[in-house]
Length: 488
RNA sequence: GGCCCCUUCGUCUAGUCAGGCCUAGGACACCAGGUUUUCAUCCUGGUAACAGGGGUUCAAAUCCCCUAGGGGUCACCA
Image 1 (cartoon, chains in turn brown, yellow):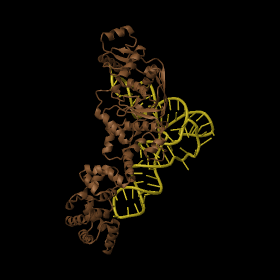
Image 2 (spheres, rainbow, N blue to C red):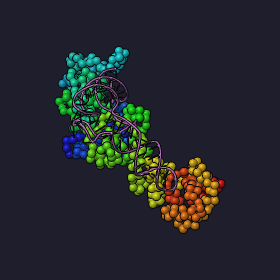
Image 3 (cartoon, protein in one colour):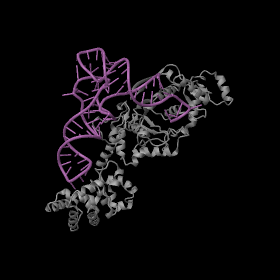
Image 4 (cartoon, rainbow, N blue to C red):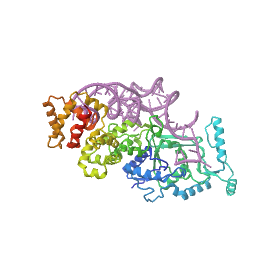
């Protein structure tokens, strides 16, 4: 291990956002490549919105992605605890020190006072900001009022001057302190705020690099100033471009699914999700789009990250999911897809185990036709329905009825099929059927279209004789017999 | 509105730091062909971009300035 320590610090409020997943992936890869440490810290300072349920989902989601932390709330480490709510003592200590050294001061403003101030400023079309009314309050007076029990918040005293952030993604970014408010470090309630604890905890956890979303860029001067007040060197920062929705705004539920769980539930393969997330703001070489996580880790560097926001393209994501599925081995695909088949009520786990070979053939036949695991069940559902009630797709039925001699052809083919000793070899069966058709002077379409319709109900799909073979002689004959009646 | 960030095909991007290798490459999507029992896959080809304007230079997508546009952020949320 080196001194390199990075972290992901999600607040457990709601679902596991894709943006969080990407940030985690980038931090994790950076540390992994360089032998550093990756820390997971839960930022539950907002007691109102934080839930255990959400925290659990974050741990589970990140693990599902394959992102594993070296230190975290469920994993001991030398710099814990890794849940901010459990670090209150330490935060209070730092606040105390800052107050006594004059880097922070008490603000006795009431919420009403502040909202009046804001309203007045807005009315004058000014930027709403704290006016520093308690900044220069006499220290003795401040102590006296505090001792008297008057409620107060603790504000950071921002000095004159300017701060330049050397950002690993963006280069130097300069902020004039005149633009930085005397921000609240500790609320009237005694609860510390994000900008305060994030620095306390990053210091305590010896974080060396902070890679996070661009929305945090404007917070950075506040945090850097705090490091300076504590006479500590700030970490290196790198602000990642935002992931944007199709409306070009920060990705949100407005324009589509943002939760990792939604994509998992819809049957996006893990590898595709990881791969796609890597492509948001980073590229391997500009040519190779498809790569595995090991390749990502091996090649990732924060300085190669794009500056501009990345519009999330659901089409490309789906394509990548489909491409991933096509490259999977059949047994792996069968495993991945089994839960979806079970959930659809088509088979149960025992049934799949019993007919494993059959199931794999069933799955293999759809491998190049599905882009998501969830697309499989509806495509194979007809195999599990009644033989005399196969649902005919209107397009399939129309195609079948187009052939005048459909009924005779089906009847004759049924007789031929009944006489076949085995249906196990679908390729041989196809050859034999083609020979049969040509002997009778039939065009292939005149046989295949009606046959596909009565067997599967679908207008397109897997190899016809694969379907015949999978169905078995009894079912196939029953479906043909039903078709003879239904298409008359 | 203030401040900050950004700007290459519709979208993700390579190229920008070290100007010439760029008549700007790849991918998704789209269009056209081909393979195929259908659908899909697969293969081949095509349409499509350096935001605009000024500089600097023998030479600019690449450096500088301005303009425009987009985004982020302005909480006792994180």
